[in-house]
Length: 409
Image (cartoon, rainbow, N blue to C red):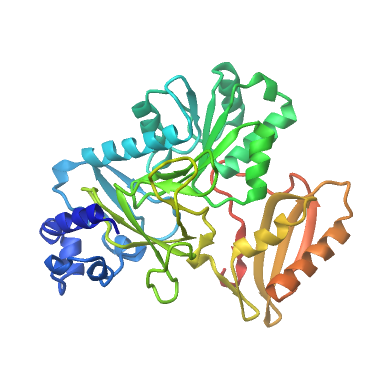
């Protein structure tokens, strides 16, 4: 923790319990004035998404209602929503961070930026737009869906930057390839985020669109997308440590791990007014990359997300992460980037079925057997593998669901 980060946290703590009923209750037995060192800070309890759900609708607010200018909600579709209030300063700070992201990606005021993520309660669309406008580039706020219109505007407006989820970027890339219109487009960069995506999917989007791509990071609870982004060196994502303090925790002990070791990202906001968060467990898995980046940026980096600590599946007594299956599939050049994992409980035992795509030039049965054998050798059990034609698995205009655990349905 940098001295200026600790100073910002201590300054926040001077009034936090007085401003927030949420934290007055959470820290009822804690004197925040006693937090003087990083070690003191690491003794504080974590904030969980369940805490934010219990505070619904505006119990998390740390400012009077007349200072709240906007609220957003996380993109989850089940359970009580998580509502995050924003002050004008929060909105301005978020735009500043997002503009930094675009600058890091080499976007300039001369660019035309096509924004395809959703608007409304979700933070994505409006966050991208605010960053574009703060930078001074031209925002083309398409929002999600209507691929026909997306491609028309992309061609007619000569959009140079695409903002999208990785799932929708792939769908657009496939449509552009199918229609043979790539040479009519002016795309040069893609700012992609909101879901973890593998190297094979990354390569397909990059190569099929002929663009340079950047992985953007963020979550609704912590402003939204725009708190970090990859650079031209493509070795991790720089994050804005003057706005957030980021820890990496051992998912089991919940103790901070050294730089370079994988664990769960935990974030504390340093400047947020509407809903400051202290030691918020994101459940995203990554690591802090030690050393300076070759790009010269002074901002620290985290590695590409590996998945989520709550994504772990237990199958036949083996702990499995979707990332492990994805790594196996990526080792087969004949497979596309798309897959689905279905887990069910049949006749007293757990079964995993993996659906993957390839072209008709390969023997489906042979590919299935080799994939199943590789999963067995790397992870310890044999799945049922079903190979299908390229394009059979669904594409999404939002986030693609890849894991279906049918044991609890």
